[in-house]
Image (cartoon, rainbow, N blue to C red; front, side):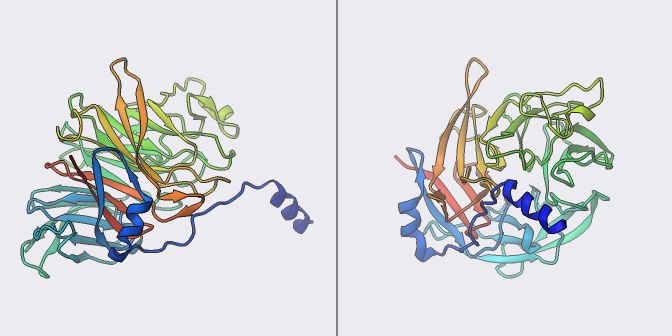
Length: 377
């Protein structure tokens, strides 16, 4: 009987279309990369660092170098700046190892906040300018006891305009009613370490950033799986205190979920998304552009879409530019394409960081590289 049920399920199960096993790119692959990746007009891309592991989030230090998390490797790296002018990092050094999915970063002077699955900790960066001697010294736990069971184990953090630290905690499941209040939520932590749920109903908002000029918090969100190729679409939400963004009770523009829609509280009010992306494209980061040389600050943001794993035809695998229009609408246009062509995947963009001089860096945990994107005349 069980065998028969498994056979019937197999007939109707969604097609699993995972990317091929990761193939690391190296500097010798740069010509192939340049022939494959298409960057928006006025920009040029090159490999900044290669063979750096499963890199995710990247932030710049006061000394001009970069701290980068490699979540699935359990490592935090120091990626040195390009001081010799060849367009590539001058070297990569390990700072921490054996961590629990280190992901989110805040870097303020020599203070480095790192988010693991179960906690947010403060470290001090020492000996940054001594090659091979740089270290991160543990100073204390800022927020502990973050639920880490189940799925969605990465935590993203950011310092808001109000001075508080915001922590995104994904759901433990594809779709369910969580037992812990912090799951599928963004948690706000004040200077005394007091934590409160800022917004909820966010299944897995890995990327978040504040819009310059308005101070509004935006977060990209990956929707639930197993409802077909084209539903539900992924979201970008303007995150407001006390708001509920639907999961697990509603998807997209407050459409009741087929499994949990009838379980929503009678007085529930859900906030619709500000923008939606192709289903299963998996947006993992958002970065508002702040340098005048790129675009008017606050008028546009880059979003890295990691790409689908459970869609019959792949979606995502790109970086898109979102432009805020005068009428309040948001337009989407390609910024970098070519990571996936005819089902062949060479990269999966994750994190985005823009330096004060307007240089854009993008991490890739499939190709195990960091790209550099600069303006060109």
